[in-house]
Length: 284
Image (cartoon, rainbow, N blue to C red):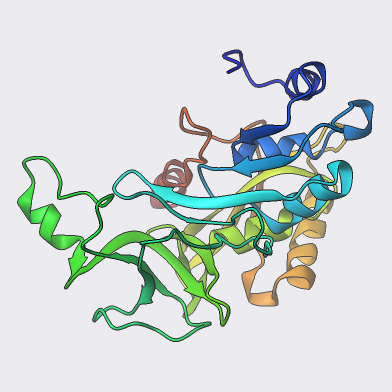
């Protein structure tokens, strides 16, 4: 274990120095690492790369594989149910997906009434009980313990979809999903599109209140070294998302930041950015 601060060059140098074969980084770390010149480091001993903590963008997985020859195996877990879904060694990886449920886990995408949804339809990610890894409830909070179940299904609070092959795809926390003029937009989709632009190091997409649309997509962007935060670049990023994702998903507002607020485990604090927008627009 390396217990020092995250420094891209230091992390990569350690992998090379100690001839590491198997390792795990957070998605935030991978997103920064692939922006480095990985050819400067001998990573030829790597056999298995894993990711955990939050979803990892398909573009990052592609860039890491091109540079190292190793495919990142991403997974999905939560405190209340431990690791629940994963891309396994020996099973084809669909970059950007959560993979398939662990043996013994029954997972599904549910609607608001608790019925299972067909492949390709967005809904609530749920885990069925009994399951020896699933929490029995929340300490001294029976009301909350009841509220997270629909019948025998534990509702994780995450939104996603399942494809025809049984792979699960993460769209975002239920309270992070942006509803703009009737469209449901997952922040992960917008952030993944932005990451494909060479100027973007990190990004976070949140709902920003809007009198006409109810909310609009706002993107907070951290730029790579050598790029300047200009209105022209903001417009370029907007056009980029329109082309890569869909016109209705583009961020109608772009704000450049030196860094994004994160938890101690490296997860982006979208709720903090969303609250900032509510406070800003509410003060107008």
